[in-house]
Image (cartoon, rainbow, N blue to C red; front, side, top):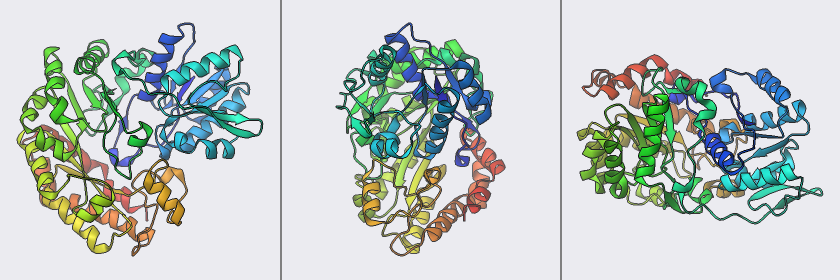
Length: 472
């Protein structure tokens, strides 16, 4: 039983119900590898199941293995509560967790939380299959690569598993196991709630090594791509089979200059580009380098790009290892996206150790000058598995150890000159400065760009500033 636990939505995103992609990917691989395996996906969000309802489902099914989705550190306690319910409702069940948080804290988690049985470290597909085979046969799990588990009162970490070389060899994610919910997955910020929403994984990892990012370490600083044809095939399959019309291409870095042309061409060759829309993440230097490919991306349905600008400070950018992100290139990236009617979402980071009120004011001014279509401001968060976490933990900077608050809108650490509360107040001021501008609001709500107009009208109804103000 794969479980997407009950959890609170991230209010910054508004109303949002994505399909449980990581579970679907694991289920698809498991189904192909062990055809006799009985697999159930319980999506508590889509089914509107509370904790009592989930416990009843586990008790009724009596699964041999319960594996909750553990994609985000902020969802850690939901994962742990699922494991606790599983042990109560089906005591013989083996509880299995994975993802970046538990990979980074495998030993600590197994020692601290008795309801966890096994941590799958790193890339999960083949490891999970071998684990299932071992549990089914009752054999020792000591030879299963890529897991951590308790062993005679200690924690055993087996040898790591090599990454999958050919991502095209992976089966399609098992969307058919949540077929009855496919019409209910949506992203209201971007489209009407009746617009079916799907997720496509176009690549894994990133060749960069930003100090606050969990991804490059988790994927061993490799960047592996699915072929453009495979990406388009998955989009076409979801569109024709389930009517999916909005896609998130989840690449940590889409790599516009290397892949924009071929991915766009494959989508247009399928004849679906007029019927779908998609969004992704890209670096501003890559957007500038791939400027000639943006028109084709827009024709292929790319309506939105998330771009990390972080800060105008060259010193801070260097400390974060965010290279080639100078202000001139960042501004050019915003302008190029706007010229091609691609909505730009800029992200900015406050709360770096040297930050002061003056430097954060400079970040606000930078966001105003860049003028992306919307801005998202985030408090620097020390996620387990990052260098920021290791440094902060070693130096005693972490003041909030509640994993639920590791959502980038709660300040976790002070800076040298600002208390944690002051960092939280500054985050609110960043949002108030950007979205409190009546000129920007009116321009957004009256924009000739349909996406921009829709989003500003939606944000006006969501009262995001009120939600942020309540955090301090």
